Image 1 (cartoon, helix red, strand yellow):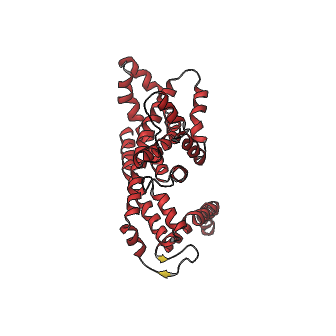
Image 2: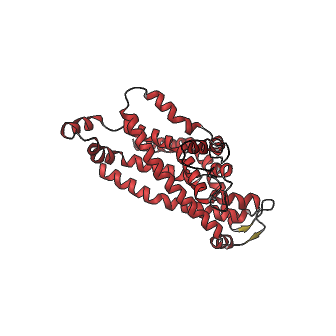
Image 3: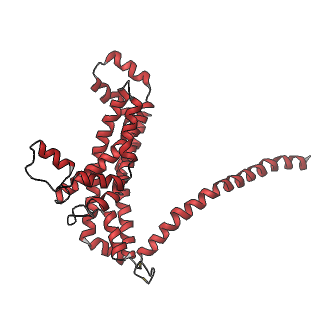
Length: 307
């Protein structure tokens, strides 16, 4: 009898161990993938940042934090970080406003909704390099479509080099980035709108007839967690912009459009200083992470209010 009882107690434990082994085996491909594609490059990047490494000869000499000190003392790198932050914040704010407005209009549309969604997707489906070349042709001072339109409307008397002046070049890059990614925001917000309970809006319209009041006090609070989550994604995407800069302005004129991703590319590929580029990459990643913190905190608080 004791043997039988012990066998009965051992059976669940054996079954539990077997289940754990199966779970570990099932998770092993994912763990290996994370190790190969995330952990190993991150450790390798840290090793490069702590050593004197060139493009042809990595890990020549241990330098400690010297690369980080050089990055902080580099005014061009610090300036590129500020430009990246400014571009990301302005692009995110503008794309969120435009995308949310389009999503609300699309949600109210009765006819042609499928056609509108297809047209909205076109900028998003356009490869960044293709979009940059197209906008480069549009913004050309001689033969460019925008100069021709402004000239026909008598707004300008002579061609404007939109990519040749610091302020207009930065504004041009911002415009193209917003043009390309506002459809992403619109579709994400539209998808979030479809998940909101319709009975709440039907009940609210019995008491409130103003669309703005309904949006401000009902739609926006329920939509806010989704909006903040989308804003985080758009912010990270804007920090990573490289293709548009490379094709449109090559970082110019001067340093006007040299963002961190493009500056780090120059340090690594043109100056062959891989150690310094790795340190700059880690510092830039830290800045991006810190920039997303306020959005994440606000997202969690908005979800707590809804629950």
